[in-house]
Image (cartoon, rainbow, N blue to C red; front, side, top):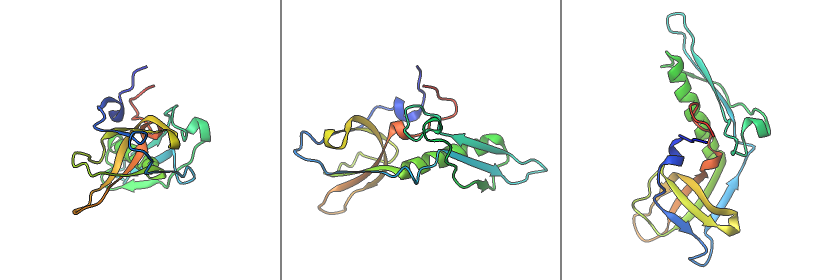
Length: 168
């Protein structure tokens, strides 16, 4: 089936393989208790209209989708510029992705690569950590100014909720 989510369609910019460098410097932390899979956003009352949108993680390959673990709602967010259902939808989907990325992270330390940036996909192969050619998205990058290792925070792309217009 067709997947139109951004992280599936962008070519990964790096392939990390810890089997070729003789060891793993990866830390995997999946704290599903912190993850939410439902996020509601409502706009303020504009000329008598109140707009809202509820984003849900319906990604069937995500281990925290609503069908697998039930609905775990985040705190409702009210936004000042919520003067349309579309703006509420955009914010709700963003907040749901952000919550998922924070709760399901992988840390990787390695040689600094200046071309690595946030919000780009990479491939990670670490059989010790059950990451077999897994597509990940970079959520945070720390590159030292002097000598030292770069630190990346990553999230498995399969965990991230798809946009409302995406299907599997």
